[in-house]
Image (cartoon, rainbow, N blue to C red; front, side, top):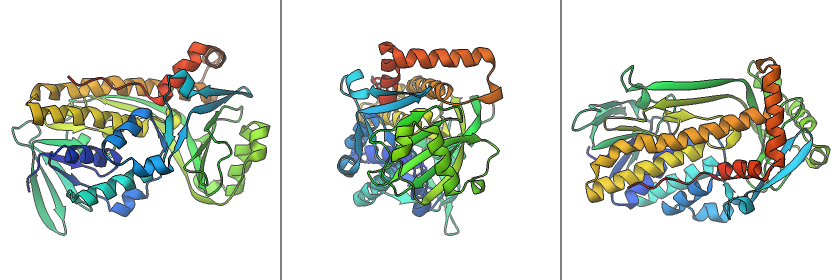
Length: 395
């Protein structure tokens, strides 16, 4: 088999990159080790930055999102019992966010690729990139007991933190930066109406809580829990009781409870590897970086990577600008680190660190809360990062 760009991974980043390149007349082949059902079964975030929304529309997959997604012009913070709404639209000159689940984004992209007749191979085992520093890289994989080879110009590693792409880079090439947080998020998904029309991020003496949503009838709620907690110890009743205890009384009173559709505990960590490129291999999304979900940046940073790689490859194939290939990692990383900073900041601002935080750090946390909720500049800082910083031009 031959293609121009081989993409490892059929999550939203691999599918979005594939759709953009396909629409531009650039051949792609996507290879995924899981089944389509497994990929769609991943329950992930659903807050899309303005730039991500625009990129999905550019890829031609925004119709259902624009129909069913919920445009949010604001978000609410609760600190020290004080409720503060951030008017995102007013603070950022008209920018908003879109609440639309990652599962739905993935479904739209899958359907678009199928409709386009672009090749995608699921349930591929032993996927392995080769000759990444050579003139002609290639992929090998097994499918139905047969070994296949894909010759290509470039390889996009969109296969997540545990994927083969990053692991194929020789030891000593990448520098890893990591921060592990001493707590996790217990999340519950339910077919209940959201307690508020906008997201609520709440800090409480008992820990952090988040009221999020997937639609007007489906809600996603989170509470901070110790890392050693097990989801089996959390009955639905215990979860709802704890969530209510961490919310303002007026919010807790309006909370509609119901049976959980899904319940899980996710540890919080930050990770970045540099560089995001090795020869003809480009790392995209979770293959190169992970953020805690507090800033709603995971999928959005992956889309940012896709934006840069797509625009670079467009100029490579249309203008012969191979000099731009070395710009991918610097361009992507500048925005990645700003997203990591914001996610770290929101995590520090809103969570209870217990014994992990000394008296000085606790006072700094209190000062940050006071400043960012009372200063117009502080509110603007949060708002412009939440809706998403602009992409740099590729030129």
